[in-house]
Length: 220
Figure 1 (tube, rainbow, N blue to C red):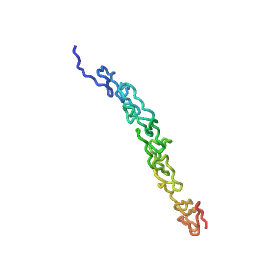
Figure 2: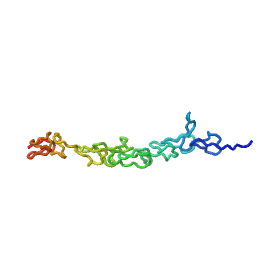
Figure 3: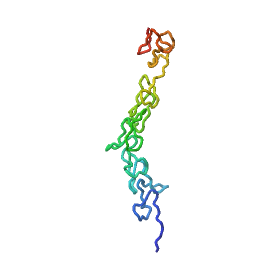
């Protein structure tokens, strides 16, 4: 009998045979970066290793998970070296991937150092905020590398979100005649806007009177 000239069939996608001369589809093994799966609708097929796992050789073995606190940037990784420190962590010699120190952050999967927290934000490892900087809320400020946002001074309590220094803090708007003396722009405030009582209607002290440093009480 003569020999058949039938061409060889290709293995299913993402699989191959490790040696020449394969005779059946069962000889096809999943490529590096892929592992075998079987479903009712698709049958046997090879799917990429999920993010956080790798497979370095052709075969039907499962993908190997990355070490603790590491992951891969994309699916289908083929080397253990593709496993990098997770966001919020950086490579530290034999210590693996510890958390970024307070005041620093890292947003990507990589082994580079953590960055200093940007001004106007806080990076607090204790509160698990070291993956991304968190903007200071109004009434607070922070310089670069801050562990936490600081409150504005009591006499200058106002600031916009993301303020970067205490000079961004502003006083409350003063209202002359409300009985609350704002020391930065009122010499006195006796609770009214009447003249003739020692405190003029623009909250300046009338001649012959004085206003104590601790309150708005006027005395001749």
